[in-house]
Image 1 (cartoon, rainbow, N blue to C red):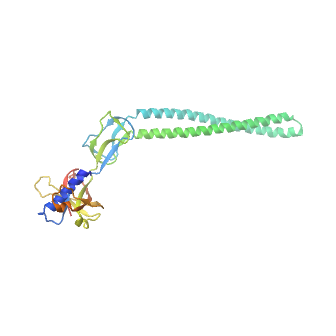
Image 2: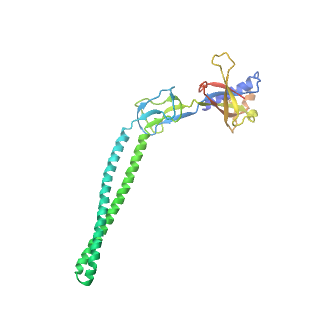
Length: 299
């Protein structure tokens, strides 16, 4: 509730309690204005709004699709990244085959070297032949090491591309705006084909199953207000003839700081009186409570 509404509720409360001395019912606490818990449904990515599926005043259910931001740029980025991943995967398989071939080559050279080394020592074969085979074995080992390094590098690039793809998919997911709770569309801030920016609200939703009333009580009555206490919300009867309709509510929050009564209360006693803001939650099964409706709060 903004400051203007707070002042209005406080003024109505104090006026009814201080100015209307004729009301002596000890169960009367004060006046309030019904408010709803609201949700701002904001865009998470920048782009053109290609779909807006709800109008102001229409009901929504939790998880319902409300709007869609143009996802074509992210789809193209995803296709590009996936093509790069496919190419990289092919290169990785080729390097893996090179490593396997290098390992097989080394095993063959090692067997050959193991066979001729005793013959070289006996003098049956010239030393140059052994040296040549030893050099070939060293070269094969260096080549295998280089192939393994290249394979590790490709593995790192693959992880980077997979992370990029996951990021793009998350951006695609954010192109869809879903209702965070069941309620009713209070405000639609954008029109189709307009540009939405990250953090910019597109819809405002107000919950309707449970509404809240903020009322003010003087310091002398604060001790009688407890968390979880049941109070009654009185509103005018639909036919306008009955004394009024009472609905149950539960105290959910009590302000810990006193507030001065608004200056537009013209009695000295009211101006000097401290009040505390209290909030009660009222189930709205029959839909009788409406956002902005003035009501009374009774014990």
